[in-house]
Image 1 (spheres, rainbow, N blue to C red):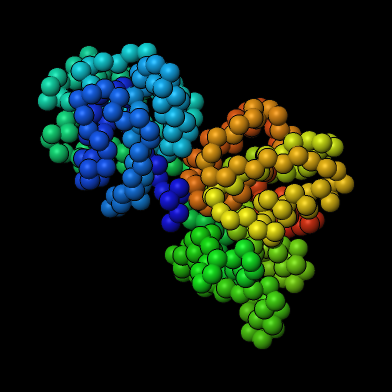
Image 2: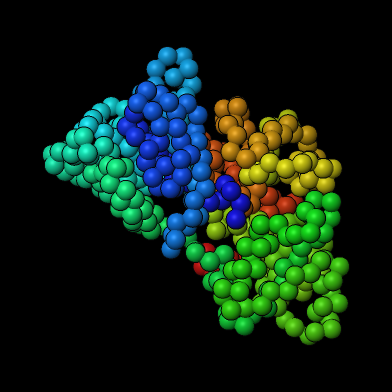
Length: 400
């Protein structure tokens, strides 16, 4: 699993509330520097950890939200940015202090629909007052824990995290399970070109193979040139074909119309939760104007070649299709978007295999709220090649 696609859990709170001690306890490792000096944590610290019967996660320790001075303001800004990368938050308070800073923090979490727990730390020094606990439970309807890192009872925190995460789950758990019946054969069409990593498959392909196995079906992995021979020699009628987006047009001409066809990117678009926004936004390609600025969002950082799908192929196809010239901005990973999102006529997101659904949603929501059309790589390519309706038809039949 890609590092950024792991569940991100961010620890937030004032300086010296014990966030670093808590992350050390939760991971069983001394990964964060602990000190009595306020403001010891200056940059966001990340650590991967496997929580049995739950998920692979990344804990993020952040600078205090009450940091001061010019440098302090920059640290707080980094903390606010870390929130947009989070799937779950632990709001850490201590000594029964809950004021404007915490209220503002939770307001940000609620706007981004990030589930959270409130942890009153350092209970060995001062226990959580019942009045404050009742106030927090009533106001935020979330788990509130009175805790001390000295108790070593990290299972209480883990169980609370599991509880809030399960309550927030949306969308299909399986990538394509609802599109299949046990025993179905699925073609996974994966070109091997200069963009393909040596000696291995890319993450979406691996994820799809595992999902097919989990649904008691059979995956056949082949290159576009092998499709016709396979179908002719075996006589097998696949229940579904999934292609790499960049060979969509070529594959659509080979795979018979009666076989449902889509792409890895479109499958991920549905799974990550912005499917309806993409459906509505993709057709707005027709309304783009000469000189419009288009934002291309990539979830990972990688070496760029002349065959790069996001940096070269899609811009070329888009300008060829429309007969217009556009300005493209490219943002990799979870880097900040420098321009106001309102500067863009359209936003096109990759499949998002390297980030979580929550991170992708937070990435796109400002554009959606501003009424800016959003699409994803797979849907854009299908539209430009005249096979958009075929590529999404299988999801309409499934009711998703």
